[in-house]
Length: 279
Ligand code: PAF
Image (cartoon, rainbow, N blue to C red; front, side, top):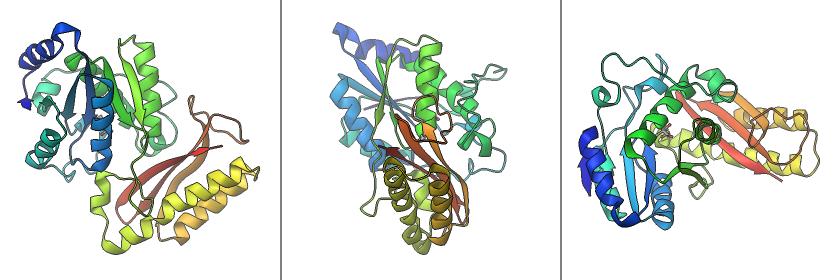
């Protein structure tokens, strides 16, 4: 696996990978890889001839009081995992390469980024959309794969890709979960043993609420009950539990398809997100 940190070298390496009409899939990550990321890499291998993974802890998607400095980083471990998965190229630019002095441009996907995680993390999705657009231009993949765990992020990236005519396909990969149902996340590493045990209440509550709504239960009542159950399960607070149109992300007060239950909750200093299909 080639590890590349320079844009001109990246262009040469991707051009070589694409020779003979071969296709390239990009899996953008911020490192701290776990089985969830590896499931994206495996999907990428199924749909393209070569896989490029990017590792870049993107400062512009973290708020001033968030965990940018503390975000887990272990490139050697990540690279070893990617070699085992048959990844052709690891794109690992540093901040000065991604955002050279004088960088002034950012992308805002209007409305889709304002609610849910966007409300709790102002500017977060502008940072995500901007870096993903840059990664698309840098790597020029035929396909890019994102996890469905960040459902709002995936919807925003799909919209941006259509709006800006990026010539690639976006694939969403199903959420990888631990045995007790907790969605795999790099941030699970922050949880103490007790918090980790309590965190299983989160997906269980969402699953039950999604089933109730699909079965005709009152939406507002079910969401309120789910919030209370998450706190009772050991979480300190709930940012939101919402029923959303799965594509436009519009909040729904009554069930109609396609719908998705979206949620974020805090346990100790850790903020976890998850989502569940409804119906
Ligand atoms: O989902 C992530 O890990 C990040 O938001 C992404 C898409 C790599 C952009 O920094």
